[in-house]
Image (cartoon, rainbow, N blue to C red; front, side):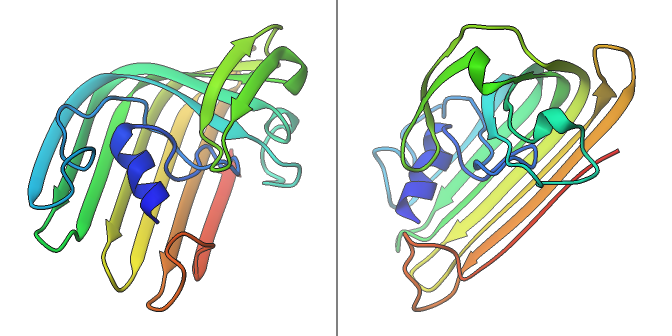
Amino acid sequence: MKTLLRRAVIGATVAGAVGLPATPAFAQTVGDDCGVTVSTSCSSTTHFSDMEQWLGQGTPGDSSSCPAYFDNDWAFESGTGNGVFHININKDGDTWVSNTWTGAATITLYPPSSVQIVADSDDNVISSQIIGPPDQVLTGHNTQWFGASFNNKDSVTDFTFSFRGTDQSGNPITVHNEQHQQWLPGSDPDGPPSASHVRFTCG
């Protein structure tokens, strides 16, 4: 779980987005050192507007209600809106994190042949290079939220993603993703979750 917390705090990938199996990312920079170099008794709230993040790569069968390009493509989101990142750490190191963003967004879906992606073992995108055309570009409005709590007994992360817009041909599309992960007392905080739920649908 330390890895997840580090990723949440520095704005890399935290919980998987757009229903793609990699975990969401809120691509912003935290405004101070709380949770980065300071790990006890601190609190920080950061407001941001721009969003840029790789949402991950799809897996065939993620959702039968979604277009085929979600099955294998890499999805990149960019947008401008209103976001708030908050972190609170008490004297025992127990941590609460939340991140909300809403605004106008573009989701570009690239086939594997059109991107060169280097990712670490946690699916964080380290570097990327676009070398070909996308399969699809979605434009519209997105609202996403991530929340997590970490303590010496258990840990919980939750994520929701809700996009409504149109594809390149003007056809309406909605994308909804919700995820929940929990690590129960006694489980390995850096291992697989004790319980998890993922729901990914399109309309």
